[in-house]
Image 1 (tube, rainbow, N blue to C red):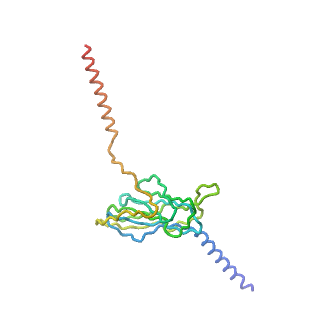
Image 2: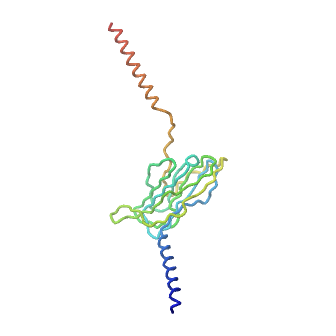
Image 3: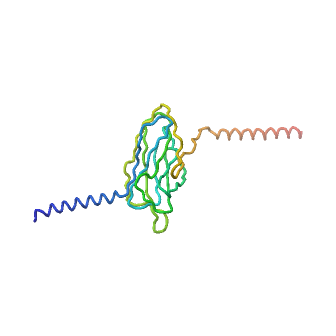
Length: 215
């Protein structure tokens, strides 16, 4: 009997560890892609996925990308009742957010995120952050705790050969992700100085005319 006690303890510890790991990973978010090779001009598609034992009322994700290689287009969520919340976008980082008025079961694709391939590149997309949201006791959205973020990185090979652009997809809840137009870098402050000098010269000319007329 004494010989069986250590074996029983080992089995118990193993089962407890397995149960703990399973409980910790019951809510998971990860990034994936079916295709990783594209031509210039084609639409790059990656999916933000989740598996959750808890019904959620929203989710967020941030994906970092190289703006020299990719340009974000939009995201589309196939989950019924999920609505995109438009957020300001910055170059190099996609910021997506969805919310629902009723709890939704998620077990698969949260959203498809689309980019346009700009040129030949070897680049990657990185899931910088992601969260699932539930309605808290106070009635406001709160992040679901203990959500495990799995695969974060998708490597892409973009060919410099020009491909055929796919038509825009209008199914699901569409969220626009286009960044603001890049600044031209033109020194507009020089224009301001030039205008100021012209105004001063004009006033000086008017002063000279009136002074000459008065004399």
